[in-house]
Length: 275
Image (tube, rainbow, N blue to C red; front, side):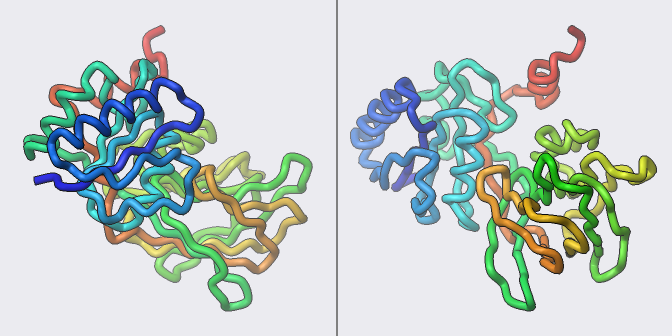
């Protein structure tokens, strides 16, 4: 039985704010405690103790919500406002039916793999974060090609000379990874994709690896302007010698799923297949 809930809304979205107010009254009438309504840019919000998180917005809002939840096992219900998302599966017209189903315990979840990244400099951990889509090392627009050494479970893979490198989850395979020429990976696959960005050597291609592998990226060369990006929402400047260690998070993002919704319907619409 759901006893507590939280709402995450797209910042500056008037309709999402109005929906949140209406939903707050709905929870109150059913004696469900609302922990709070948080804009997606409220980085300090902690949703780990909630029984349900409702996300009102698009995929960017969902990614921010995933960061707020941390490693808690919380069902997350994503509502979109007409623009079908990869992660926000329910239309606004389905809101009340969907919330009632979750509150009554009649729902299924799609468990999405998340990654945890740690930035190490001179042997010291200086930053870490949990990601739903991708971990990216990227150079500034005018910087020279950078070199990134990749190790998998301690074994040397390659030293990629490129504009950067993407480590993407199946969820993130349709984001930056896709633009860089990486494959689309079905969401339930236990896999991670390593995709070089504009590699200097054309035979450097995307690599699909097990999601339980320990990945280590070392910046071997690069001028100023090299950035470590986590889900495109938080960034850290890198210097030569920095190491990024990536592993599978111990918990998943648990997305509430609509009945009779086909993942390939989303792909066809978002990618305009057949048009």
